[in-house]
Structure formats: structure tokens, C-alpha cells
Image: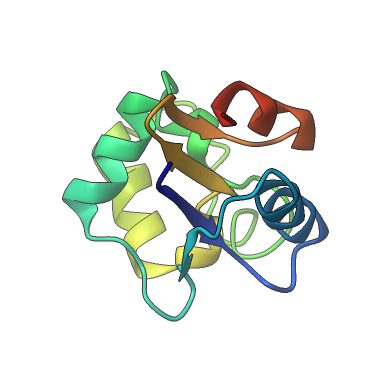
Length: 116
């Protein structure tokens, strides 16, 4: 089974999910999204496929979320996506894609839905 993880090696959750994928016998394609961010179109696909809203896919912890005022409920999805594209650290992680679907694997156990 093919798998892709949108990974941040500095994130404990992301590292734990990657380890679970490998423990399940998968060697996923690892996309370090801070170095190689997805296109806007791909990000929208990931969010939709995971059944999330744009706001749910937005990392709300710390900077630059607070500094940019992204907690404002009046901001549109396009404005939130603009911020995510300008600051990839705002993309929540890790997104995992397998033949079984796409999930934001937070909490870590969510990845079990995608394993063979």
C-alpha cells in the first residue's frame, strides 16, 4: 500500500505517526511540507478529503497564528488559505494519505484508520 505523510520532523506527533506507518510495514513518501509546501490546490484537496474545514486544518498554536489575528471568525476560507500558503507552519500536521483515505492524524491514533 502506498502512503504519503505531510511531515514536520520537529513535531512529536508527526514523528510518532511516521513511526506507526513504518511499524505497519509501510515506507511512506515523506513530504517535509515546511521545505516543500503543497500547492494551494493540493492543500484544498487534502483538507476536503480529510473531511475538515479550512479552519480545522489551521494550526492555531502560537506564532504566527496569534500575530496574524487568524482567530478572527470573520476571516474567509480564502484568507485562511492565503495565510497557510504564506506561512506553511500554519498547516496542521501530519496529513496522511493512503488507499484507505486521507486524515489529519491528530491525535496519533487516527492513523490506524489508514493502515492495512
